[in-house]
Image (cartoon, rainbow, N blue to C red; front, side, top):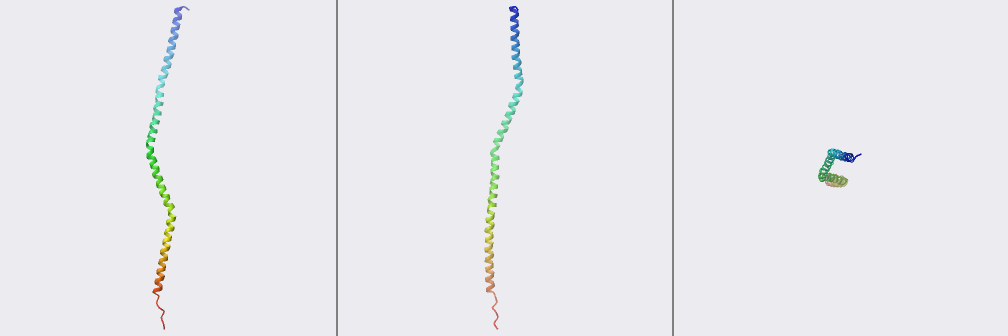
Length: 116
C-alpha cells in the first residue's frame, strides 16, 4: 500500500470512528425523551408526596379529634355504672323516706279505738 492509500485508509477509519461517536450520541439524544419522562414521573411522585405531606397535619388533627370523641364516650361508658349505682342509692333513699312518711302519717291518723 502506498503512503497515499494508507493515509486515505487512516482517514476513512477516523471518519468511521467519528461516525460511530455520532451514532452513539444520536442514540443518547434519542433516549433523552424517555429519560425526561422518567424524571417527570418522579417529579410527579414527589409533588404528590409533597401534597400528602402538606395535608398530613389536617388529617392528623381530624384523627386526634375523633380519638377525643372516642375517649369522651369511653369515659361516659366507664362512669355509667357508677352513675346508675348512685342513682339507685338515691332512689332507694327517696323510697325509704317516703315509706317512713307514709308510715308516720298512717300512725297519726289512725282512729282511736271506740270505747264502750
